[in-house]
Length: 110
Length: 115
Image (cartoon, rainbow over all chains, first blue to last red; front, side):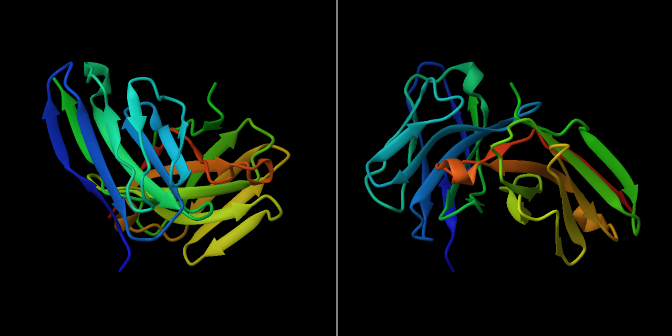
């Protein structure tokens, strides 16, 4: 069955370190998205991609970057982790409006 | 400026009764709306959607109503079951504008169904 996976599921890091969160989908979807979920804010879009080599900034993109070298993967990189980036991160993919979400990565920045 | 609003953070209902979850939006370009359900430690899962050309869409126990003039939609769950206890997110997109694959989410509402 097609699926979308995220790794790691939990991560603890220190401020200033570079962190990369992985997202892999086997739906063969062109569109992929990264969100963060915080109490009182719901799901906020970080970056998104409509295809290979395409990336776009979302609502809360500062301090984050993505790259899309193939259809299946959209890794999210925190260049220099900050405590404000402690959150739960969700990756999603879609072909049209209905997005399929991964299980999430809980990131703690100390 | 929040374009999709879920003003009630939580709702508690008795098993077997109706649950009504509300959502308001401000962007008149939104023409497609979705509801997602989220359990703890899991990703959101798609529940039901509605296009702006309709005012109602039904799927089993779940019905979504859209009032375009009021920029308001609601999700009805009848009858409510304890397994429906979760956080529900309302989302919207502007398909006609292009970039329709992007969704704007509300803050979510926690539904608790008591046995």
